[in-house]
Image (cartoon, rainbow, N blue to C red; front, side, top):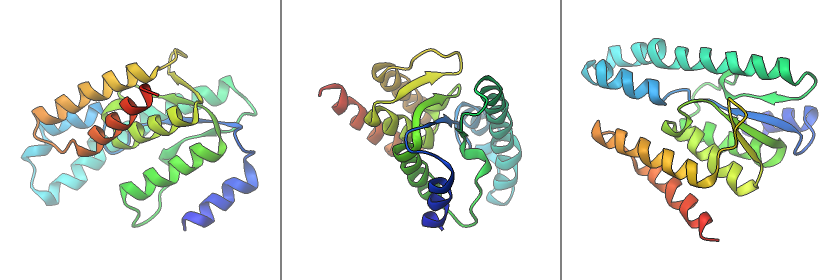
Length: 183
């Protein structure tokens, strides 16, 4: 499936020509608020449904609003966003890996939506964007530096720890980003 999807990009998108929009989907700041107030108290059968309604659908809706704004601002430019791709049975890691490959092949600039640093996928996309040395912007068209990204992800890690949630993935990202800052 992955190769098929990449071949679709190959047919339609010139290398290093598009804008990518990094959007928290399953996690992010809204996830932490929801988890703290409601999610951690739910039984597993209710958790998935509530997570979909309260976190994923809200994140997707906000993200798509910004994507639509960018498409209006940059008519004719390919704007790639992750919320529209749904592949049955793909894990979060498969999505992350796929979008990183898309960034590496087809993207010349990336926008990161508010709270991106709370998202595992967005943090990985930030790392890929830093490694590729493309323009990285927030929704107000302000550059996001490597040092700002590290500081923001570190702050998110502390909030995850406070809720006793897994932090290894984000810690790995910050470790890799910090090693890049020393180069």
